[in-house]
Amino acid sequence: MLAVVGPTASGKTALGVALAEQFGGEIISADSMQIYKGLDVGTAKVTPEETCGIPHHGVDILQPDEPFSVADFTALAGALEHEISSRGHLPILVGGTGLYVQSFLYGVRFAAEKTPDGLREQLAAELNEKGPEAMYAELQAVDPEAAAAIHPNNHVRVLRALEHYRATGKKLSEQKADSLPPEKPYRSLILGLDFPERAQLYRRIDLRVDLMMEQDLLNEAKRVWEHRDTYKTAAQAIGYKEFFPYFAGESALAPCVEKLKQASRNYAKRQLTWFRHMEGICWLDASAPDVREQAARLTNEFLAKG
Image (cartoon, rainbow, N blue to C red; front, side):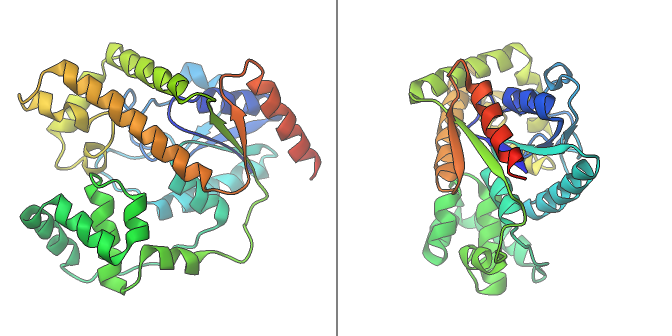
């Protein structure tokens, strides 16, 4: 397996395509939002032109009201890896959802977990009654490691972690430790993209948001807002929820755009923190003029080892 990881707006898509062209590869998307049909601009979904004819799997496979978990992703990616390899092509995992990348490459096994009847509804009621801060504080108390990896505003993941704890009496971190196999299932080269100066990345993020606005992000966000009760994942996603105050008549547009830029920069920091804790990543300077040549050389050496 080859993987290209890094923060948002670091150039993962272009590098993945370049390597696929050179080494006969196909892309498996490791992005938790690009799986959804119709959510194109806010997720920075790869365009037909950007694919350069390289097959991209795991993109546009679900409607926005359908749930999709990390367990679903590892099952899907495993099947795709088998298909791509059987065609004699190189599977290339490309994306910034660290939990997806790590769970798949580390071979995390997800056991079927039966949620007690009424527990999910009870947690949702508690969220409405006590508020998100109280629920996050509870998670910090019972599973501080899980809380540290989840943003306080990501109510879906906070409730899911609490649901797991209440249903099993175990922390998510304990489940992860129990679910790791003795050996990783894939021999993998993981290429990470970053910038020597964080300001470079932040400039790219700001420019990307400006381009998204030109590409009619606002209408896409409005559709999510209008369906926020059923598009539960998208309604929590960066790129859409920042505009909800505007649609509700509570804010002007410009502050919402600035809020999106800030949220995207914060997300990039969290992505880098996650990937920095993963072992074995070969970090490349995303701004280097020869970054593709460096990546190709490392890939060549990796494949030559057999």
